[in-house]
Image (cartoon, rainbow, N blue to C red):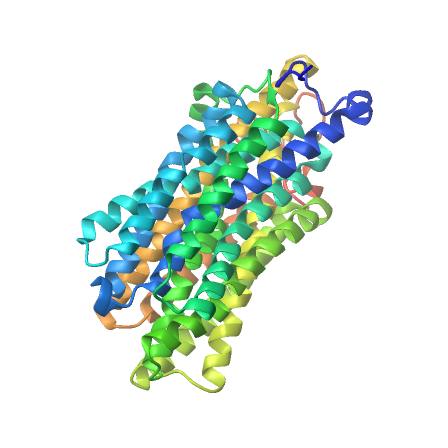
Length: 480
């Protein structure tokens, strides 16, 4: 006999259900969700690796062209996250994970063809890049699905692991690219793509055999409309632009910036590609690993506190990058010695901080709506359903808006290189944004109110310990 693929009456807050098999089911779905999302992230960032195999004299794309393609990949991934958020409630988490893995065979196959036939027009690279954006949309459906499987007390860990494990796909594909370049040179990109064609099939089959649909998932258009017009929805989405937008944007840009740095130091295109590949994967790897750490820290100290510290640290690192970029421009494009070490260290630190911030912002989302639901005049079950629906909706909306930040990163870098031949102006813009994000975090989620707010219907909520937000509709105490 085969087991049912749909679970009815799932309630992770029911300790008896959780201890009598619920945890095992949730963890099994989490692991396969991580794997499918991991491969999806790899396909999304496939072009970031392919640029290492694309010398300008062979493929005809200069640095601004490559930044433009990267921007299109991130942009389509961002827009597609909205419908993908709705997909798990409509089709089921298992069903959608299976479909979303198999459909990525299309952009992977298209990338294989275009890399084997250099000299294509720019518009064709843009089309293939747009198709690869499907891989970035997987994040939204995966996070919404896993959010429904775990109790509130474990959401920080579960969402951090799911997102961090998925984010590792960015680093993994860059390691695969490094191994291929080291073994076969920078003219054999087909080996990288072939690996992921196989992994996509494994992810789809694994989802079909090991994952479950939940009968009660309630993410819908109405919930998304609610959070899209809600103050907390806008603020948390803005913060996620700063964290995840930076992570994915720099994941696309880092390899190309390293390649330009090494060629500016006089290396050949093949040597520059190899040396860039040896370093590029470290940034996304750190960002992915620290995302899991950030989830733990947010559970312990509060999402708002971790988010504030993250943005302050990111501002400091981009100031360091302004210094190194200015030194590079002053030396005719060369960057060596201590300045080169500072460039590497600042970028890697920036990646690590984005990972922590990704987790802390996502921890804040379910906490905000769980706290606000306490002020609703609803039965406990309805209150919990409202909280889950709005949390899931905002996870999708914030994920989409955050990914749009990756588009802004690459377009800002493209504009900076076109106007001045360096990234200095772009890093000035990034620094200003991180400072603004830190101020917003402090003002909205951490500042003590000057007067005691009116209590919610069920009494004062201790949201400060978890980084929840006050609301204009249902005021709660500011985070301590």
